[in-house]
Length: 323
Image (cartoon, rainbow, N blue to C red; front, side, top):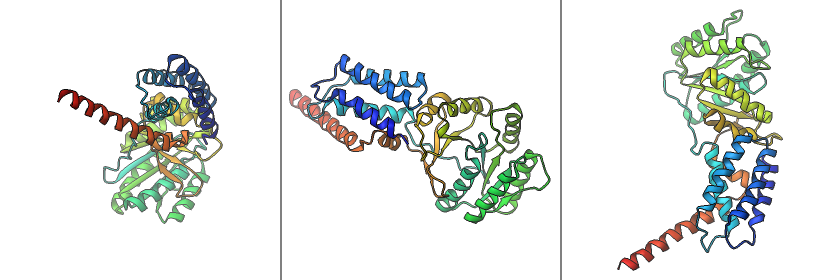
């Protein structure tokens, strides 16, 4: 993922190679290329424009230090702006409540059931939680069977009610079961559809109202690009979820969803799925993702060091003048 975007951005920065300083002309030329690279990566048009406008304002207002080449400085500005675009800070999952209730939402095929198993494994092994997985997809027996298989692999119990077609009741009963059996984490896997529909929205809103989860997560397949962003907006308008989970980030995806979704729904990306295995789940770190997109973490560090040294030099010069 992001390979094409990384290559395009690298080519964009070459425009500044050999330039002695940053000017409005060479910045405009570079950013025209950057915007084109973002649009090709399926980034939302408004987001791409806003991004390049911000980078331009910062680039033109910045002093180019002798120790740094203009191209390197532009990489640093784009890196920081990419990290900010994707949320800036790493968003943690809310584990308050006894038990902690985490509700999954998303379309069919987005990876909700697999993610439920991955999250249960992660919080069990890293936080010492005692999870209970809850099967609330009453329409697809295959989803319940899949959840049971995943639960068996990670040695976690599953709550199901054969014959009960009321997911709100199942979710409420599961929480009572968790309290009685000392499970301090309840992960509720819900039904999805092939497209957003009113029945699904009413159902998941009713589950949320009944169980009052600490976290409602929207799980989305990052390979669906702009469609992922539009679906996230529709879900957020109805559900007001707490965070986004991007699955299949290891696939042949252009990465537009990762770069656009935060701006469009103003909710943080909390987790990314990076493979099929149950341990292939990571917290989402915007800064590390920006490193990965640019493939230039060393340049970013170099610019930061040079800027810090420049600030010290200025301070010493000021001190000398005062003396």
